[in-house]
Length: 365
Image 1 (cartoon, helix red, strand yellow):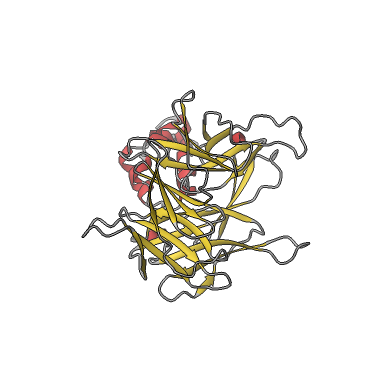
Image 2: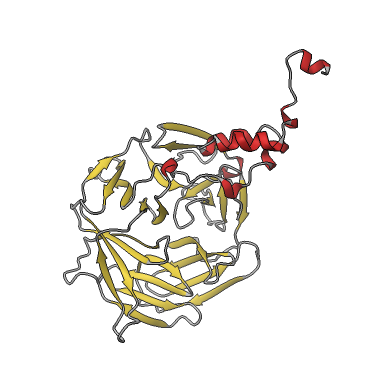
């Protein structure tokens, strides 16, 4: 026994790998893994990030001061609030928006009234690891745009897509996070008025905000491939569209709701491969052991077959905002809804301005 051990001190870095594995198996919350990996390099390298148990997404609070490096998150199942210093988020606005869901989009902060407008620089940030990926500059990010973390049809790598839309033109720009100087731009049909978007196997799915039809564009040449009719005959602009998303078994889902109504409609895309039928949306009452997470920017789907995650199956988890008056700030709240019954139940949330879900993990893209 050495002098350090006689004084009650132990070299925790020298623990056997088998012992570290036993400790790691007792951990369930991602914050415990962060603390575990912070002990030393030996402990950090002993946990493969692929072996982490499924996590319930955290709620991100809106940060009012871009000069504050701290980000606040809330875990509903554990009723815990975490403050995480993310130094690389300094002087940046946080752009929530699945399907990124485990990374945040950040954009350089520009004070109101700044002239001339500087270039907008977008990056991907994992707040738990402080790992950041700068994205290639896009000349259209200064105006209306849509941004999403997408995957190519072979699943080999992720890409990022920007969309700029006005009355004159629509431009779709693809870029690979690891190829900073390669940004492929594609002009689309200027008549497309985007509302919700989704990219799948080289096709861009966009819901028309006026008619409810889904326009599918081939991103290889910008041509309109086909149009999927609205799932309801009497579509109204008051219909709230929550997004298009791919579920965990490969189906494309569409989530919508009538204004001032609590029933959420979920549709599955039938591409019409049988009997030469046309593509259409089919309403479903169950998505099985899956759950849809919706926030102010979009949605993503997670499996609900692992008890430790606390995710309920056939459920929609919501972050909503409601305007209470012209001079009053919007009210935000969280809830979950059983898709079959349609009745909402409030989720605990200590934040006055929750903005998005974020799936906590220690992965690097």
